[in-house]
Image 1 (cartoon, rainbow, N blue to C red):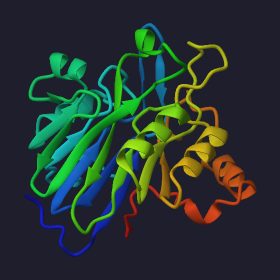
Image 2: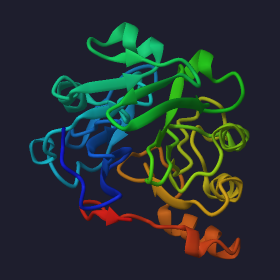
Image 3: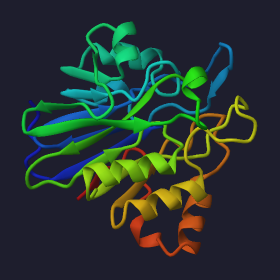
Image 4: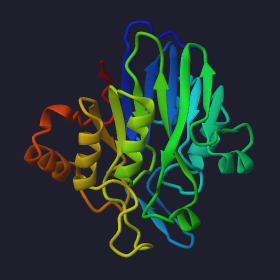
Length: 254
């Protein structure tokens, strides 16, 4: 177990969807991606444009990996798959658990207790309604512990309605790590498969006073909106103070 007693919550954005979180006396890592820039051929070829802010060997020991899904290289690349084997625990979807050794699959709304932290798998939709047939099942996560902020990690979710459902069921959320960037590979025409600036603003409204930390908006060719555009839209919507855009490689603490 990692000693993180000096801060209630620390987030280090490594790149793409990959963040290291210190929370509840543990170190957590989301969606490991550590490859250098390269292409990933497949039914739809993905193009990685930039590498991580820090290499995998400098991340340090990780107690828990929170893997939103395993079927896309921008959420689990080659180096990320290797890193996955070094973590104490890895949580993901039941489908990912069927494909990956030593991964525990959580059904929607299932909870698991790890040390003093309760982890809940929450719904995510990687595209429009019915996208699961093409994009596969995706999950988000909520972390809760006594005396600590409640943290929501969206995974590759494009649905504001799902965010509203999560708030209705979970209650107040203090910190929300949202995958943004309006990811679009053309599979669903002009419909994005992650939050765009407009829907991210709607999600922020649903999340009330939660601090919004946007990630997964850079480093890959299929992102169609910048973080600068996101910040501008939040400004127009009167929610600039809610937004904390992390600098890759520089920790944010709460």
